[in-house]
Length: 82
Image (cartoon, rainbow, N blue to C red; front, side, top):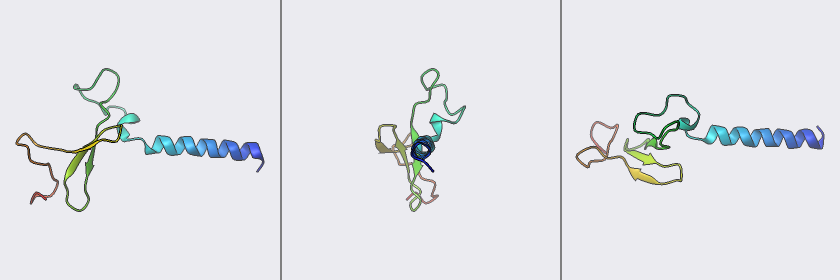
């Protein structure tokens, strides 16, 4: 493999890794709803803690906050809460 092929392979690999690492709302069609800005999603992602089942909202800039229900309790996939 010559220098140009190696450079191209590394470049393509880096682009692929970046695209795959994006949250699904960036590349999955239909991942927005009527509360999102026109022609793009909000960028929010729901994360679920595997051990506790508690859910968090993540932002594209890296912010993370607990996901709360209308009563102010943190949403959980665990029936007992947390």
